[in-house]
Amino acid sequence: MSDSTIKVALAQISPVWLDRDATLNKILKTLKDAKSQGAELVVFGEALLPGYPFWLALTDGAAWNKTVVKELHRHYALNSVDIERGDLDDICAFAKANNIAIYIGIIERPGDRGGHSLYACLVYIDQNGIVQSVHRKLQPTYDERLTWSPGDGNGLVTHKLKDFTVSGLNCWENWMPLPRAAMYAQGTNLHVAAWPGSDHNTKDITRFIAREGRTYVLSVSSMMLKEDFPAGTPHLEELLENAPAVLANGGSCIPGPDGEWIIEPQIGKEELITATLDLNRVYEERQNFDPSGHYSRPDVTQLHVNRERQSTVKFD
Image (cartoon, rainbow, N blue to C red):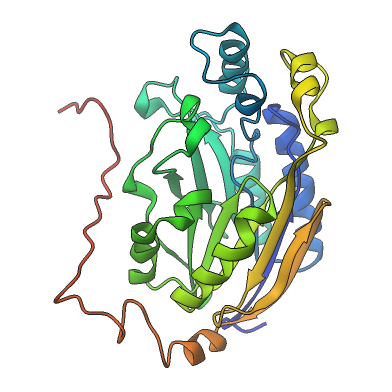
């Protein structure tokens, strides 16, 4: 396969909900399956490791000082990811051993912000097994704000992969025009949109991003069924009493740089979705529209991006 083509795999799987170690094992198994199918880039949904905070919508999560919410948040924090501790080392080792690049959604509990607050992050691991970016979601959405913290612009970067330039954003960040513009300006032509699941998120915005950016878009979503709540989860009975049968139905999909479907939203089952993409299609579609090139007016409108990693203290 030439450097102008790439085989991608979208891992539409459910987590072992709020169980970091068991979910890591499932991710590694999925990576092995992707390798056996020749994938060069494997992408996973938002917050897959260790899972999306569905309990907030099932337990009156905005109620002040509520025990069930506090105890589930604690359980979430204790199963979150500490990159510096080495929680992603096995995934990095797999990437290096198999020459595979990976985008994966995690819940990070970073030491540089005190080690207690949680951030929804999209992590890029290159083919050498090196973590190249950790993008902390700029703005948690609605009830997510009760358990996730707002991130910063440090991860608004692109990466070279073969002849492609890849980028990634978390969930509703893909609806935010200015973060998209920051990626377009850096030359993205293979954009990863990571979602917690469901085609109501992916079916419209995915094609729009592809058409606006004249780029391939890998919209990757997780699955989550009522039966996926593990035994031993705190307050399991209350969760099961209030949970619908399907909490996230997938919806992973791929449009081409003309905005037309290569793979329409896939709904209702765990699966590994693969496709081979040709960079030449991007150059064809950029002929008539290029949002940061010939179809821009930087003398009139410009975007300024602060990439500094935010912290409450700086030590000299």
